[in-house]
Image (cartoon, rainbow over the protein chains, first blue to last red):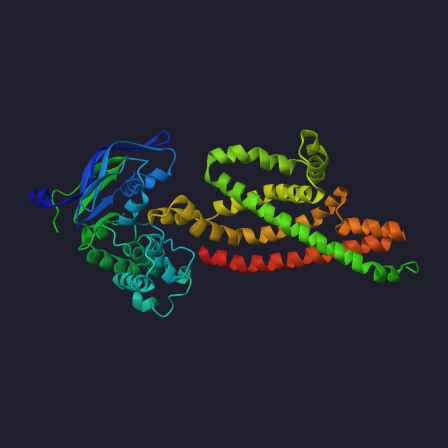
Length: 243
Length: 222
């Protein structure tokens, strides 16, 4: 417990509830996710794990029927931001809080454009800078050597594992402070999953990771802290952050 | 068959082809109107329950009433309330608004068919709703929509024969005029039908080609 006290809190929730229509998905949950750590959230399907991730980058605000109560905040650039404010602009926040989904979702464009696209939208125009950052990002996800000769190919032609690494590269190119991962290896074979796991371990030094996973072995290998979500209730499973 | 006067076609083919050209021109401009109306209506209806309900009556009314009546209303009916449209404007509006209703459904269906993950991915990258539509959803929806859109153009080309009632000298009207000069209904209307068929069949072939091409792309996206 003493270890946990010295950690820097990145995301904090206090009596936070999430309702979608008449369905209360998250019920007065409280908890903290720490900086430069990988926190795993486990639990049965439909228990609210993915919903919790969608709160962390305000993706929930795109759902007209969603309502929240309580407190949910994230610290970005040393400043606390309210995750419950539906009217607050979310674009800047989402660029700092990347998200990787269960199913790889490359956009219908070339490999290069998939990674360069967020940079262009963020207002970066310098072609050399864009090319360099795309290359760096693809290096970090161990994809560069596999795709460097076909950067103009349709990204949807890549294998499942490559597509998922491309999606991570696309998130990383904006240098996010937090990366949310919703079962990032569930659609992949063992080799591809191992590649992603290796990548996540390396990412911890640069950003805070929150990962939903069904694989307890994977959680044991990667996570510094574990929460269980069940019936919309969040419960801390470990007593200390061990790594 | 001894009575078939091929020479009539040689004498009148220039007039008929000129009429065909006018039909294609009017259809093309009306189709632009239809694309704008259908694109905006279909996109709005696919994005928001409010617009789905608010614009529903337009779509249902246009699809539920004959185009001929809509054309009569625009050209002969509206002057009663002080709106005078010339025959060409009435034709563009009539064909465009009518086809726009069908095209809006094509867009709505195509947008609904884009994988939900694409929208989530775009939002999670910090794209606004408009950016998500322009850069992510519409390019994919257009692939699905392209073959039925080309079919829509073919259908409009045939429907354009109805604007002959507004005294516009397009292919059907020219056919009627040539008939009144020659009294050779069989040859003239057969020639008019063949010209329509050649034009629409060309677009049907184009549609099939696009269907194959974009179908391959759509399969790739799965």
